[in-house]
Image (cartoon, rainbow, N blue to C red; front, side):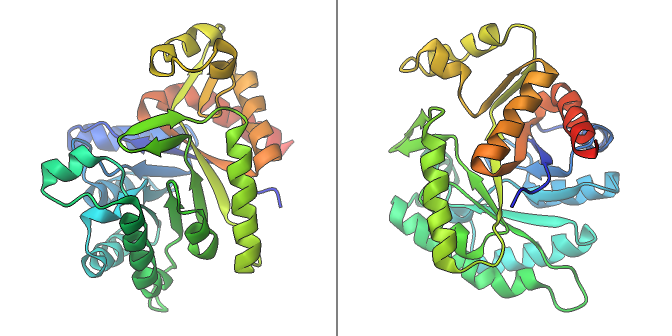
Length: 289
């Protein structure tokens, strides 16, 4: 099943209330479907930011991308979700993950559990929130996104959106996945969906770490070479998490990812807010023709 494209921007830069509202309105003007907020220390607090985003706009949905469940008690999180869903007029989408930044847990004074324990806590959180996400009969259902490593089976059972990571986490380090590796993850995930007996597949999402409209994609890719010295120039150019090139080239690249891997939902960081707008317009034009 080929799902329509959806485009999201993850807002990670703090700002004044007016700056925040202006950026959110600009995201709506550019055609973004979702305005998302991450969950890292030093970035805007998710729930009040989402309420402000919804008040400043009319069309985009708003969501978390993704909450570190290690920071949160499920019962208290359920209260935040219920209130935010109501205050945003049912436009909330809840993204959950295990959390992966040890330094943030240490700074917050919250234990950073081993991977298996973090996955168990995420699983318990998803299960305890199931009733909250359904609404109370008078409110809209809140879609669930599950993202991260080691959670594909959980996502296949419960998520409306599965966010695929572009990296592999080993201890405190991250290794970027090459162009071939995401296909293996998607194949594994499809097996989990079949095992779960889903009637319809979840939407698949990918975070584009860099997105730049440029006549020289090689130069843009070269900027991250120091971060990935283990990759060749050709491998860097083919990284799924990069979207550099002309508007047409980027649109072709995303169309290819949808055709090959079923990824139809793409998230960019807010420093690419403006640059990615023409790509959204091009893909909308193609879908309408």
